[in-house]
Length: 232
Length: 358
Image (cartoon, rainbow over the protein chains, first blue to last red):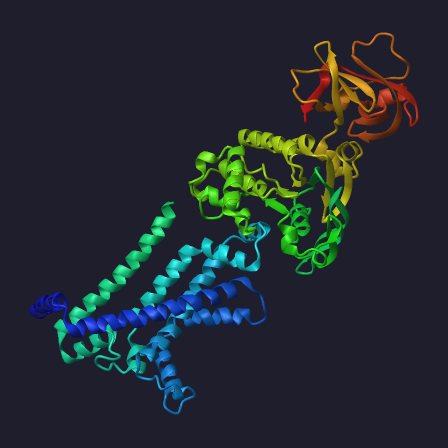
């Protein structure tokens, strides 16, 4: 048991001293996953709304693809991105493998299906008659979509939360496409894996506590906004 | 003026014809009630007339302009409003809901506020304006839905059984609001309903739908007193229904002018000038010669137009200048020697008439 208590104690010392290694890793994690989430929310909502409101041959296949995408293991995404960005791969000329941009790209691929899937479900959940009523109010196509998105804002909050939760906690893809380079592509999850394998439990514990607090705070924030909306 | 005209409008869902309307006109400032059994296509008709369901064929004219060609669909829809049976409100405040149509039309902020306040006030929901629309009772919600529809001051109002999801008390007050608004704003109203009382009180013209087809359309009294099929006959019951105007006071009631004849009715105080008289056929007595002594206040000379059996009785339609239905037994039919074209006297008591104010 001593190893655990000792770890916790040292972890809090590391955090309270604002250890530069810990804070660098944390900031990079927030930056990378934050950018990935913002981009995913944008494309995810677009794709989700498009699939929910249109009807064309092949739509069902795309919906199935989105739903599958919601559960794709990050390591698979990591593998695909690595192959595409490999020196002589199709996008090798970009030279972004083992940079934070590669992690962002992988995380976008992980989060976009999650956001699309939840958006799609949310919009489809709106009663058909309400959609008719919105059209009957004289809405143009764009006004119609915007009003519908406002109606489904709780789902969109949920989609954002799920998207961010998915990428901040993901380790496989970040490891594979980022390379866990110290001070450059090392994020909270990859650092935790490394420190644990080295037996540096205090460091690993400190990183885990931060990771946990981060997800907790972000989710709490979104929940707060959501519940305030609900009370109105 | 003809506001809206539909020609050969046809709607199909998965290859099955839901609605097939050869010709229908809606005039300015009239209430056209659409009635019909469940599944007759009442809602589909409203959806088709606003192009909310795309017809597989047919043309729609708004003030003479063909919709989709001379007038774009969005502009066309912005001249109308829709109220459905369930009040489908947006998940926001009551104020925002009533203002939503105006915002969509891109009105100036000041105008949106003024108009929204006006109709919040009119429908007596001003104190609810900050409330979330999803927390309202069904009656309140339907008021919001109506206020939202009226706020855009449409030329055509489409109402799909708007009073059927609320309790009787709310319904009466909503009908009163509707009637008050009829006097202020000139709107063509298409009103789908299955409530006989609503038809009698609100309709100017009537359109009967059956299996997606219009089986009859015309003035209410024409459709009612000469039912084209069994469903219409049973919808209105067996009563004679007459439209009339109050022309004076009579002993214990009023004198009502119907098609140039005066009918005496005994009733409580009436405020409105326009009334509907409902006379049950069993309350009408037929004489073959002028009776020397009748206690009934109303005696009219008429001609037998139609006779047909209804259960144990015969139903006789008499033209007294206005149509009148009477019941006779088989014996009476023989004794009175009733046949088509025969001149008869018909009488009914002033107290046997039910009066509905309009």
